[in-house]
Length: 215
Image (cartoon, rainbow, N blue to C red; front, side, top):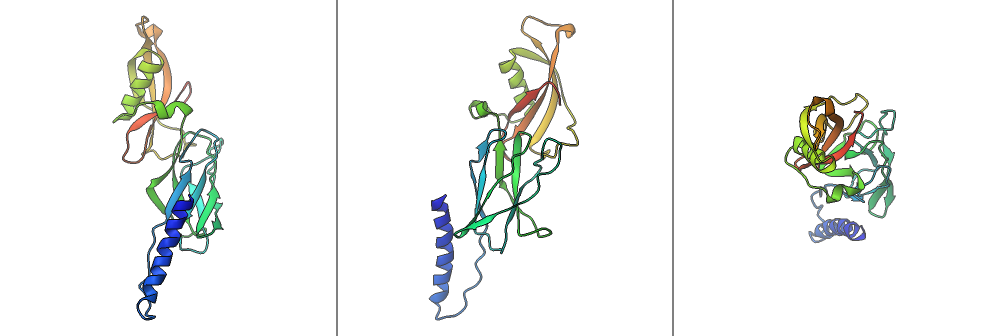
């Protein structure tokens, strides 16, 4: 993170020197897009993550995770960042649900919100990094049935998520799936699970997030 902070300071210093080389004439204003670094960018449920923001030109900074809630479904709200040299740092809230959470920035309550499709905190199962990704969420569900249960999908349907679930629906899909274990065909032997697939970024592939007996 020190190297990234140095880049930000270098950009500001370069702008000042450029103005000095014009015989004292005022240089045009320099617009810096905030540079956001998550440390780490992927955590397990309940894990700690912090945020470093460079290039933020306002007097204050507040940070939030879009859709992050506690166990009762209440939004976790905004956290005040503190200055650290030319950058800002803050420890991120810890959502109660796995998933992908976009980072939001603002100066204060009521101010415009700044966001990017690249600023994402991922909360995954520990083994997720070693699992495959897919072009559709349904393919991720089928993979779970075949690899985890050694079973065959009998039926699959997208399921409406709870109103308490505030995660971005573009990134999270819940399915109910019925399957038959190997050697146990027939309707009477079918089992079922609620399986959530997550999109690894707004333009990324889909992967398994988790499978549960309840939605």
